[in-house]
Length: 229
Image (cartoon, rainbow, N blue to C red):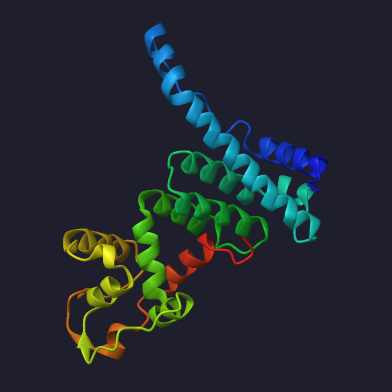
């Protein structure tokens, strides 16, 4: 049976954390007010409620497990910064994987498993600019063999191949989308998350399945993932 008391408490906690960080959208004119109220406001309020409830439940679980203390979090400026920034950015997207990543960043910060404040801000902004495909590909190249193992699939048995061919094997929906893959690959490189330039360069099969992420890329992945959630 669900404990409604805990749920109410969790929602109150989330509300107190994000209050003041979500300013209203300035609107000019009655027509704009009517249109935004009809089209934008209902789904925005739904997103806001879902975000706050889900984050609150995760924080409540950590508090019940003695992993965090709410009073300590109220004094943790980095945590408050992350909550406000992640909340603002999460409300801008409907992509579930990105929303989950923002939630994980909040939870990891609450439990003391986050990088310093500067990197946290950079990582959240980077996540905001990424698509779910950026995240998937980055996680994949962090350990391609492990990815195939978790997917209960055998890695391609290439005598020779390229990184793009391995990615296409993992994600067939990306076949014949070379321009998109090149764009994502360059974005991840510009972020400093890998240092491999030749995504189409032919190499040995083992080479194509090698880990590609930089230490910074690994930190980013750790920040936006959480085994507990």
